[in-house]
Length: 162
Image 1 (cartoon, rainbow, N blue to C red):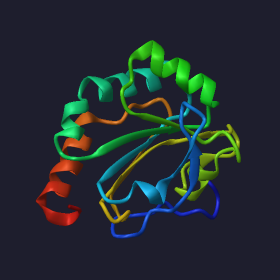
Image 2: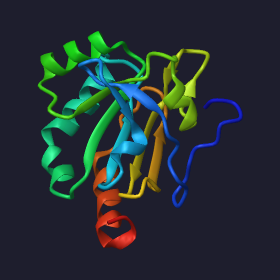
Image 3: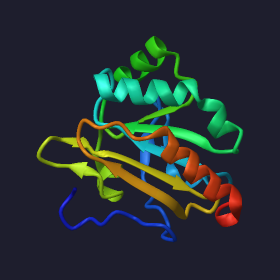
Image 4: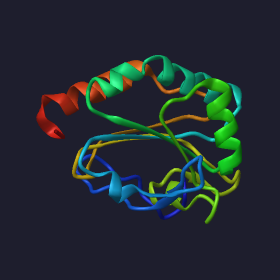
């Protein structure tokens, strides 16, 4: 974890940051409010575990869209790398680059590893008001559980975030 930056927990407003989408356009996280958002930080595009995780999300995208949740994947890779990854894997959701300032969003969320220059595997489910309703950080090399996402979506649907 980033020293001195706590992970935002349930009930706390999510930090704001401006990232770049795969077309080079800026995306401010606070501008995504109005509907729930799942932010998924991944260490590296094209790596085995990250590709497996994000492909599983792609293959289960209806789980998120059916709950009215916008899926957003964030890494410190460049815009060009993320665009190539999205094209190769057929990702139909947002991939945002935290390349410059390097890791600023991951740092704000408490999931930047400064020794390795990459985010940890952190996921944050934000309600329509930008309040964290669920968060998880997985150990290095371990994929997050799709069942964990299902449980988080059920909590959101139960009235804590819609």
